[in-house]
Length: 378
Image (tube, rainbow, N blue to C red; front, side, top):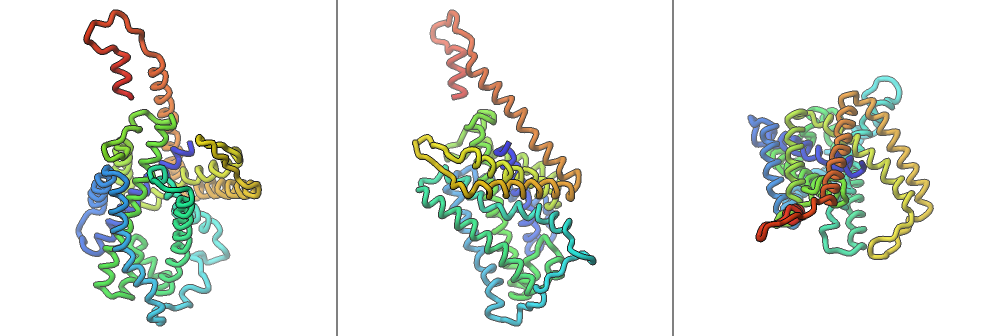
């Protein structure tokens, strides 16, 4: 259930990023293009790239990240070069939209959605099985990803609000960076920024594709999904899982169209479930010996921390699902329940593999049913 919920959590991220990238492209260079159509085209290109294997993905992503970094750095360093651009009164004191008191329900509702992105640094762990690297490098990679997200989620809202204020950011939330970019870099600079941010969102979509497709592949290897999801192409990419993801993304874009917030909210039903199960599982298997004989021990002081995070995520899941409404939580529940027929199908495959009819009077030169079956299914 945890693995399936994880897959459901990240697969809609492809649709969300592609829709937002299309919004930026429409606002800057393609004013008359249909957002849904452009999203589907971008998605087809990304899945074609993903089918070429992980190494090719990394090269493309690195190129897009470098292109994205230039305008973003210009935005964030602008207040240091021109202090007049940043107004502290726009940031502090904080003001909530509610007219009376502290809007706790509003804060919880949006914390529920924010958790989908804030926990997202852990997705870097999904590719380590395909990397020739040491455990120390893996730990360093996780630390860099987490630190980068922490800084970004704190710095970006602070700087952008100080430049244009909350109202400036709220004019068009789908293309929130264009307003401050126009203030700092002018009209031409805003267009360049929009293109670069579209590149950043496309990189994000590619990361989601890698994470979600590898999750289905690993679930099949672990015995939970149909065997067909284990097959890889000549580049080593799990091609059938990539196709499955592409179909789901096309359906999500077709059903939800540009309503990305509801897509995220429904996906987060699965994501928060993962972060309830995950800390509790570490408590259950505090001492575990790997296949290589190495003993992994979780420090005792992390046990109460694990219970605390599980409880907080459980409260956030229940409250957030209620606040976002029936359609959101029902979508999450329906998708999560699909794992059960898939598991039953895999169990049926296993029974067939272990129950092969005996060979009776096999004619010379013909392959037996057993040989044919084992050859086709590995």
